[in-house]
Image (cartoon, rainbow, N blue to C red; front, side, top):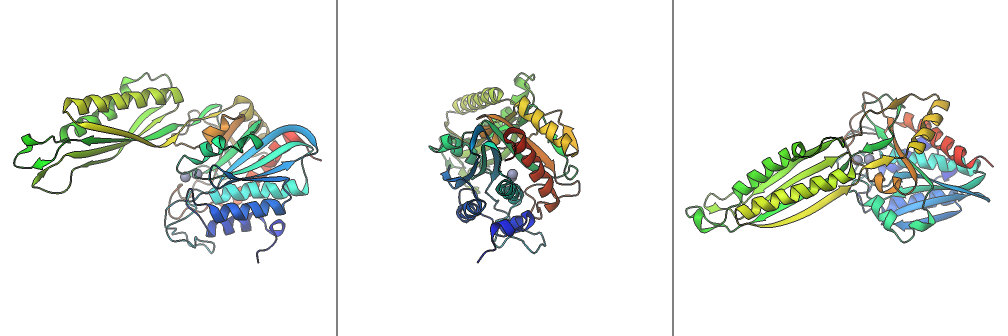
Length: 383
Ligand SMILES: [Zn+2]
Ligand SMILES: [Zn+2]
């Protein structure tokens, strides 16, 4: 029998979540446990099955007012944990190496405070979204038939950020994280005996031209919309068989931009480049996209609210001069209200995100909970 939720402190909550991680799209037990805890904290309503296993707890005050949402993520990563901690993952090759356990514990710590000191008006929504790591979760939540029940006026999320001073908040108005998407190009020729390559259609040279062309694409696009980047991540030609001239090739790249319109332009340019090169050598072509993230745009008023509350708490604050290059699927949710994503420093000596020894520092829980609680009081007061 588990201890009562209200008697657990946020550190214990995080350790329990950390020990039992689940992969994107499979967050069944985590979601169930969170729904139970939200119920114990006295949530007015609990909405489940949001975009998969997503769950939201709604704390509604008697008086009408704004709906303020905070977002955490349920999913862990397919990584074998190497951290030597008592709460290390009990699941082989699954670990909370992105610190989503810490984000969940922050929202659950906030739930405990709302339970003890409910807001005076409006609704606080604590959303635990699924599948952040694959870029599918937030979009799934927004497109879910039950999203209307939780659609926010204001929405906030934090992500922990190793390499920055512990507890330092960083913000930026406008683009905060980049749009990114994975491109897969498959070239279909005809394989034949290596002694008679002229009888087949070998995609080797088209593959090389596509790789080089993709690498050069950013220079051919306007540079006034911030970062435009292509990273070649994988290429494969035929099989290891010296007697065969191959008929198949595959190229994969990650496209990254600060601006969503620029992403559309870059994606179009990449597709047309691949088609031209395939046609040149009379090859069939298939194109697929995966891990599609839109940019996260922070609303200036939401950022201003964070700045003021961070100052009131006397936490260190940093203004970013450019968007982070990485992507977050929070962009889908941020666009649903006045939204902002912030980062909270996890310490200069901390392992990087997705590192097998990464473990969310517990010292970040209180500043995160304090900041989110101040945002609740700002919009919804105290009863
Ligand atoms: Zn991650
Ligand atoms: Zn993450």
